Structures are given as structure tokens and as C-alpha cells.
Length: 141
Image (cartoon, rainbow, N blue to C red; front, side):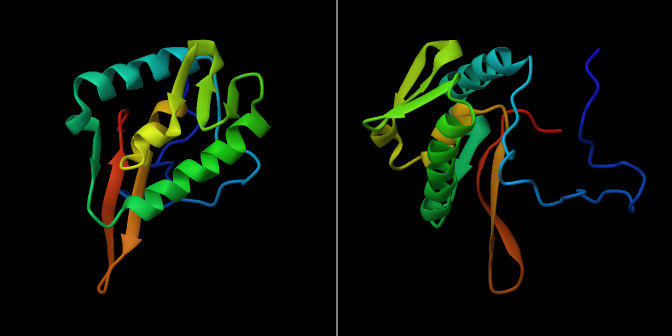
């Protein structure tokens, strides 16, 4: 059985809080022994049921692009044995899968979600509070 490294309810705060915390920018993406299996599952979901796991609003494109740009810069540097990025193509070596970034110009978070195990939810400020504007969410907890 795999033990969870992160849980939203660790008992140190009031129930139903998300337990959000800053992450180390040098290690913000983690890869574990389930990497290939989980990416296969995510790709299957995004191919077969894209509307169930990827949604966006009209105001999210810039923020989605920022997430993807950060990944394209970070992944090949941090994990060169797993990722290669050249001439607008990002490759995930263990899966022998490559993506043309320009094919995702209108859905950058969808590509971001296909590259890593993590799910992404973009929350942006509004006049009164914050609003979920885009998500690639394949493994909700």
C-alpha cells in the first residue's frame, strides 16, 4: 500500500481547510514510481473524456500559458532523463510521447496536465473574492 505524502486534513487545523502551503520552486514537481501509470491514465482520460477532466473559462488563457511556460522551462532542466524540449516539441521519454506545443495554443493547461502527475487548478482574483477559472483535474481527492 502506498502511503500518502500529503493530506489536506492532518489534524493541525480546522476541518475542511485545504492545508495549502508554499512549495520549493526548485522541487515543485515530483516524480514517483507511479509516473508512467498515472500519465497513461491522465492521457486516456483527456483523450476519452476531455470535458470531464479539463475545463476553462474565457479569462484563463494567459494564466494557463504561464503554467505551461514554467513547466517547459523547468522540466527538461530538473528531469533531463525524462523530458526533452526542442523546437517547440516537448517529449516525455518514458512514454515515448511527444507534443507540439503550438497544438495547445488555446488549451495550454491541457498540455500541462499531460506532462506531469500533478493536477492543476487556476484560481484568479475577482472583484469580491476568487474564482476557479481553469482546471485539468484527473485525480481529485
